[in-house]
Length: 173
Image (cartoon, rainbow, N blue to C red; front, side, top):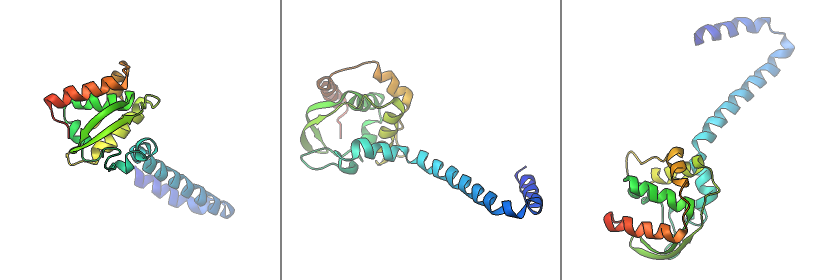
């Protein structure tokens, strides 16, 4: 089918007015460039959303000792269980407040709520962070999972209590 269309295009080119060939070629190249750029942009949504919302405080995902915990190499491990995935979604939606231990370091941590973000964006951010771990395949978050968790609005100290309960059954990295 495609080869037939290309043949038609090649056969039709001689019949196109010479003054229109260059503008049509330029228009075709612009359309191709636009389609390619949209494909790249869609692929990089997780990267952009993570950078715009999390990257500054979490120093690109690697964290900073004594200030903010690293996310890369931890999110995927926490997300291996349904309870861990739900906890991570709750952290983004409701924030987290209080001292935590992560990767053997203690942080007196306060993270704001990102409830203002839509479900797809939260899922993209968490999936992006999860993909930067050592789990293969990395856990993936969906907008439906975020929408389900969004129904329960809780204070950040309650998210901290959930962390303690989760860590008691499955030690968090």
